[in-house]
Image (cartoon, rainbow, N blue to C red; front, side, top):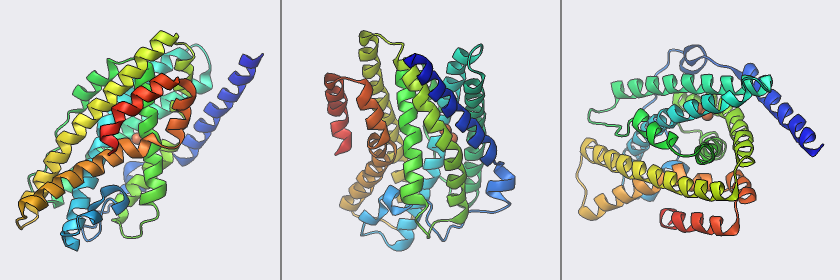
Amino acid sequence: MQQAVQHKIDTNRYAKCVEHSKRIRWDIDRDVIRGRRFDFSQKFLPDGLSKVDRLEFLNAAEQRFLSQIQGRSYANIFGLVERFIAAKVLEVSREHWLGDQTALEALVRFSDEEIKHQEMFRRIERMAAEEMPEGYTFLPDANAVASVVLAKSTWAVLALTCHIELFVLAHYRESIDPDPNLSELWKDVFLYHWREESQHAILDELEWLREDAKLTPAERDQAVNELIELVGAVDGILQMQASADADYFLKACGRSFSSDEVEKIRAGVLGAYRWQYIVSGVQGRFSEVLGRIIDAAQAERIGQALAPIMQ
Ligand SMILES: [Fe+2]
Ligand SMILES: [Fe+2]
């Protein structure tokens, strides 16, 4: 009986996601880009995410340039993670093929949207490349990363996905939307992205909990280890890209810095990336859901693994 009630609640949530997804559906050119270019007299990422305001020895133009570099990588990182997210969502949709057709529709729309988002982020990268100084490189390869991620258990991949899609929402709501001084086009990219991601975050949670219900305690324990490995892999990517972005900034910004300042720039970019892609997502709804399904020892293990990153 309780199961039937839960099933009805879940079906309604899938149905709401389908309804919203249909209502807010947008097109890259018609709705988002509309023939516009980026305004390079404005920042891309707000200070709350880029943390460039902490590098007080940079002048306003330099802080703005560093925020634009970070914004470019921000778009590229979403293009990257959406490769494995779309593949995983298509895979878990299999369980609804001959079952709840509303859930199936919700997940098909979800993966379709992620494929569109990847195309949008490739466009953003090309547009940024046309106007920014040469020398920028985005190092991680989407398929190589996806192969590593998708080799982990579904529980771990859905946990990571839920974490990512929740922080997308938090970044937009808390930092991007309230900032009046961002490039209008850049801001619109993340407004439209946020609208579709709002459904994804709900679906991630539904699928994650559905997967969780199937696991034995031993399987869940192993999945927690895999989630820790995935967060470690994300941190590895962030270290690599933070270093590349700091190098690009130092080469392209047109003046030299003391070795102490160079160190601060490098640490500042890495700290910002850890905040953006790990720390800001660990709080709120994600830890609430995670806290409900793992035990105290597992929470302790995750806390220990995160400690060096959270500093
Ligand atoms: Fe997306
Ligand atoms: Fe998404």
